[in-house]
Length: 248
Length: 226
View (cartoon, rainbow over the protein chains, first blue to last red):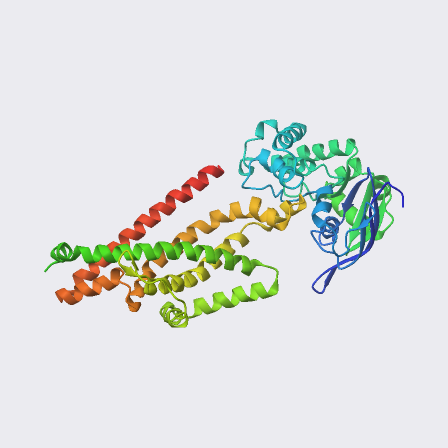
């Protein structure tokens, strides 16, 4: 296995009760990849990326991350999650903490970074997402787009090896989608590895270097954005794309 | 004799009783809260036996009358060598079982209040905290509990107020609380109605003070948040 491989996913299955949501996913994610996952709702996209940081425990199959099987018993989940940033659809900022504390708490409590250093890094990141003036604000005082940018900065504060985005713009008002996508695009340009579940086809097309199409718990098609959007092979992909593109 | 005269003649009985009621209520609220925290943690634990024990405890305590619990604790724990003597005019070997019984009772209710408060915090908060690499303990301490407290406080205030009133049953074990002294005055004056009015006013006053105190505490907490 080459050093470039970050995630090696083999025959991943996940069931909730009797419902099988993931039916055998095989996928490799390399360093520097920007992978977009598209597909209809209920296709298992979110469950798939939630398996990557073990918010969902896979039913069977294996996920090798940097050479270690993370599905093995006794694997240090908390260490793994430090290296895998996660951004949620609903932002999930810590409501009891202000913006700056949202960015420093995990650095201080989990990575044991000193308070001064954590704050310095937090302020740099806030500057990067354009929210330096909001350091003292509480989440309830921010707009959706601002919340999501803070959430992205919070994940970056842990200096992860890969960032997972679970429909980062789906809960936003339309006029705020752009500011968040721009931040994510900047990260992609900086070479940060990321996996993005998204309904923003334009974004998937422009930013990703690989696009996965998922339906009914399987990856039905994958390829470069050009392959998937301009010349889809699978009939389900065609059908899905014709539906979402026609809307625009 | 009207209510005024009764109070003027017998006020030292009412005051003595009130003192006991306050001491018992305070100790019960304190002990009940500590025990309630423990029970709620057991209830939320993923370790099955803990969880089952807590469920059983809550079911039994909520499903039986407090007076029965009081007697059971008193007779069941009679092997404990309680310290002799008296504290503020109350004999310890009687008042201690009362405090134990009331605490056991209020702990069940407080545990449910705490559990509900914790579970009312959005699951996304836990997921976000865990995604940053926090252990479940760290997530609880730095993210979940600070938010849960705001849900818990109003309901727990309710429980405290209930507890102050429920202490009235300890008269059945001969502890000279407010109701016990109320009985003495009734017997002495043959005029029950004014006595009960006096006691009602005293309980009401205690609970109004308690409510005000809790309000101040709640407001202070909210200020630190925003």
